Image 1 (cartoon, rainbow, N blue to C red):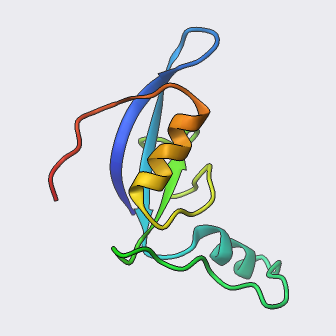
Image 2: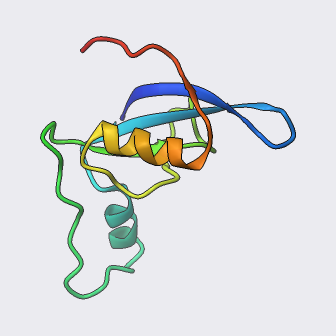
Amino acid sequence: MRILRSGTWISEAGDIKPVDVVGLPYDYWYELADVNGELERGQTPTPFGPDRLLYYVRFAGAGTKKPRPDSVAFPTIDAAVAEAEATVKITWKPSRSK
């Protein structure tokens, strides 16, 4: 798991909370359903994006080493960032170069 973007948002109570976008080389939700025997007939993993990763938003687990995401899989980091920004106003830290 790679944390690719991180930032903060302010809760309704005024608390500053973390958020991040992570890249995983597998479909987290598909693998979880597979392990739990909950795959539906014909269900397939989300196709990878051009970087061979899937991107997820994390609010609850932001900044931790646990890969559990709070979003569906996105094929690009831009799509994951857009989803996070559609949820709350986020102040992102500057991106690091690859």
